[in-house]
Image (tube, rainbow, N blue to C red; front, side):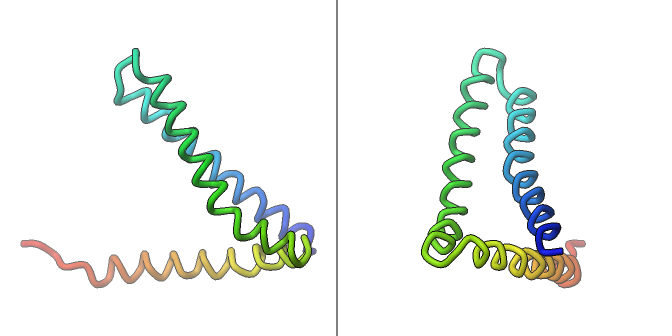
Length: 101
């Protein structure tokens, strides 16, 4: 059971990280000239990889100092909490938004 949850979390992490790289690459190709598309796509991918490393470093350091199992438990516990928090923010943002006339 725990292995299944870990695999789902790993899939979500990978999709969230590399899916955005692919989407930014597509957007760059649509909105930038042909001469600069490849360069800008590579620069954005590099920046996203650095950001992903920075985001994953605290979990890696925690897993290194305690255990890999403790790191997976953090991921499996924090992912649902983060999803609920994001859903609540979405609902509250839509509910209390000031309407312009």
